[in-house]
Every structure is written in structure tokens, then in C-alpha cells.
Length: 365
Ligand SMILES: Nc1ncnc2c1ncn2[C@@H]1O[C@H](COP(=O)(O)OP(=O)(O)O)[C@@H](O)[C@H]1O
Ligand SMILES: [Mg+2]
Image (cartoon, rainbow, N blue to C red):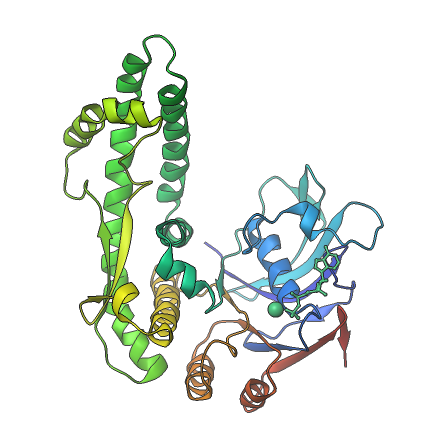
């Protein structure tokens, strides 16, 4: 498995960005500029190049394409290096209905598996308030670490969609069809739940440790999976699905399963959503992401690219300082944006950081 660092990027027709060649260092990169000039767009371009998707919800090609006209095609040209310092050029051409990839100029069927972690403390709000955000969070990061999980999750989603269509449309003999499909659905539910529990167990020892190294406060942090099917056998999960078939049929959808399961973040044993201040929630959320990054390292022996957007508005100065000190001690590649002058001063203190200044979508020297 290769993990990558980005060394150059040039985008054509992506949002407000001009096709300047942006050069990144393998360590800390600070992207600076006033609001609305294109800082987040640079992070988004890297996220799209790496994953095909934005970190913004309901955003795809039509939103990415520059409104300034021209050909409806976005081109990402980039240079990446892997952990053995091998350099590869990587180009992606995106239109409304196709994406093509080229490595060192040669078309490839599969895109490079570039792992990124996007961090925005503002997302802490969604994480603490919406079960669906928590599920998405866990599914995204667990999929990044575990290909089997990713594959099983897409199978589960397909099987569930089929089951829900049957429950909704109720064609003749739909219950028999559902019961037949529930065999696979139960096996997948068992597997996904097992993987989730293992993931949370692996994350747990890193959570409090990370919180302490980030903010020098000692707290007990833990995430629990809240699921009816934990510890159940495949057969019992299948029975649970079968027992609920009448309710499900009234509701027109499947009321139990991994798609409904939730997570609770416990801060010193208390539900962080109910008991933590917004600041503590943000700190816990950041600790969770950095703990994940450490887990990533245990698994792959190297790091993902870490994209950090606009932390300054969300944390106080003392905490940014701690965060910057934390980042300085890490070996991962970081791209961090800010429009805040005070936070910029903090970033300026980092020796060897690469500063990228952006105005109206263009690099300024
Ligand atoms: N599809 C697009 N085409 C052209 N400009 C866009 C597009 N989408 C967003 N923008 C512009 O990008 C700018 C926002 O960039 P952003 O990276 O979010 O700024 P910031 O530096 O504050 O992070 C705004 O000026 C917005 O009008
Ligand atoms: Mg921004």
C-alpha cells in the first residue's frame, strides 16, 4: 500500500482558482488569504482529486466547474510522491459524466488511492448533533482503513435499498422475497457491526492520549456503538429482521440494522453531546480525528494528507498554539488555511513552513 504526499497542483476550471502551479512542502503548508479568495477551494480540489468527492455535502461537478465559462471540463494536474520518495505525475480530467485518470501520462483504469483526512472544527457541531453525521464519519474513516468494510458496506446499502423498495411497493409475495434477502443482510450486519466494534476498540486508547498531547488536559474519552445487534449471532439478527417485518411493512422501510445504529462519545463517562461545552466538543472532535490519524499510521506505517480548514474561528488562541505545536511534532503533510491575522502570526512561528498566499484565486508571491 502506498501513501502519498502532494508536491504540485494545477487546476483548470475548478471554482475560482486560476491555473497557477501550487507547490507544497512535505511538512506544514499554510494557505493564507482573506475570506472568499480560494483557500478552501485548494483543499477541496485535493479532496476531489483524491476521492472524486467534496467534503461539502451535495456538491459535485456542476458546483466545481468555474462559472467563468470555457470548456465544461476540469483538469487536475498534480505531482505526488510516495513513502519511498518515488515521484508520479497524476492527472484527472473530469466532465459532468466522466472522469479519466493518467499516471505519468498513461491512462489508468483505477485512480491512485490517495488518502486524505479533512479537518474542520465546525463539523464538530454536526458530529455532536446528528446521528447520520456520526455514522457517515465512522463509515468514511473505517472504509479508508479497511477495504473489506468498504465493500461490505456498499453491498449492505444495495441490499437495504432493495428491501426498502419491496417494503414500500409491496409487490405480490414481497415478504418471501424479503425473508430470502435477509440471509445476506444479516451476514453483512453481523460483519459490519463486528468491524465497527473493533475499530472503536482500537481508537479508544489513542483518544485520551491525543486529547492530552493536543490540549494538555487529561480526560477519559471513549466512543461506544449503540446497537441492538452487538453480540448477536447471524441467526438472531435474521430473526430480528423477520420479527420486524410487519412494522417495517407499515412504515415502508427497514427500522433496524447498521444503517440506524448510533455512536455515543463519552467525555469522562458522560455523553459529550449533553454535558460538554461547545469548546470541549470541538476539542474532543479534533482529538478523535488526530487519534484516527495515529491509528492510520499503525495500519499503513505512514500518514494520510491532512487538510485543516479554518480552525482559527473555532478555537481560542491558547488552543491554536497547542494545535500548532502538536502539528510541528508530527511527520504528516499538513495543509492548513486561515484568514485570521492572529492565527497567521502563530503559523509564522513554525520554522520551515511553506506559506502559500492566495488572492482572487491566484497565487501571490
Ligand atoms: N464554481 C465556481 N466558479 C467560480 N468561483 C467560484 C465557484 N464556486 C465558488 N466560487 C468562489 O470561490 C470563492 C470562495 O472560495 P473559498 O475557497 O471558499 O474562500 P476562502 O479563501 O474563504 O476559503 C468565492 O469568491 C466564490 O464566489
Ligand atoms: Mg474557507
